[in-house]
Image (cartoon, rainbow, N blue to C red; front, top):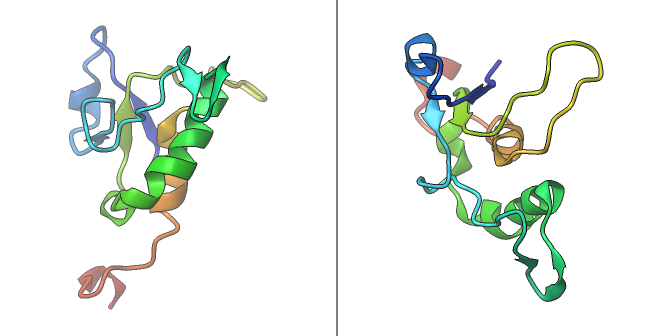
Length: 114
């Protein structure tokens, strides 16, 4: 099952995840909606992490070729959830990308489905 990987300067994350796709803000997969900026069309309300992910899903996702990410681990700088039951962290666009990419059907000519 594809998963979210945290990029960090402190651990050799790439050695442990050599084929993970980087999806941070420097890539086409990055979330352009930043925490602390005004919400689109609501300038008196600032974006929080949840709003940022919702805006990403509504405004950015329709333009992205998410099928390219199907079955791949995705890496960004956002913290991972703490270990244990009911542990949560701030929402991350990787969660949105994983959800949509893994809903995609097989690509035409994909030999792995035969």
